Amino acid sequence: MEDIHDPALDGPEAHHLLKVLRLRPGEAVMAADGLGTRRLCVLSSANRLEPVEEAVTVPRPTPAVAVGFSLLKGDRNAWVVQKLTELGVDRIVPVITERVVKRPKEAGKSLHERLSAVSKSAFCQARLDWLPKIDEPREFSLLARTEPVVCADADGGIMSTDLPLLVVGPEGGWSPGEKELTKGAVRLGEHTLRSETAAVVAGALLCALRAGIVLPSHLR
Image (cartoon, rainbow, N blue to C red; front, side, top):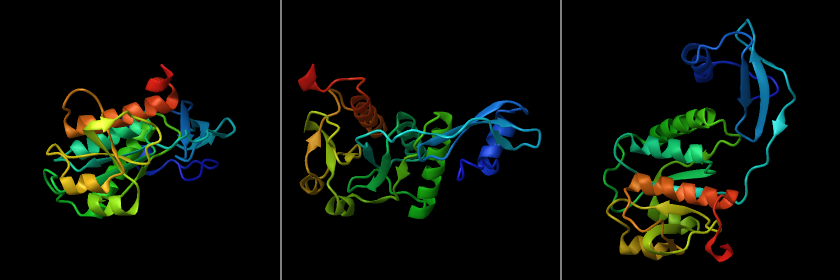
């Protein structure tokens, strides 16, 4: 919702609530603006959302979790974005690597719009408070030259929430030139993972460390 204080019911949200979930007047709906604020409402007889409680703002979790991934074939890009959103990742960065399996047929803007829509839907489904930022797809080499990037690699170090941006490479692996552009590497586990699995594992580990669900190795 753009305005949590006057929550409008239109567009995809209206279709989902009225046509898919088939909500009826009087049923409760939690409205959220994606910026940490939510408000309990009820569906009125005029198919409007009527607030019944004051808005509540939830602080953004810290530190921020950012995960990038090398673009994949078909719908796997959307699947990765959906799962990373559900996990609570704050920023999702699709990248084009040297060994990417297949470059996207969609224009960058079109793909970005589709992935953003997928993320918004997952945000609503998971009942999150903060909507992640979805970056437009870009070349990995350009990204790594403009901000610090850590890559996921079997020979990397221990996972930490201090990572600025953790990027998962393609199934063909990182090129030597790409590795030289990074600020280091961390490993995700003992086994070889598919790229989409690795991206979700990266997000899950970082979010679990941040939430205290698992402890860093030096605190065990």
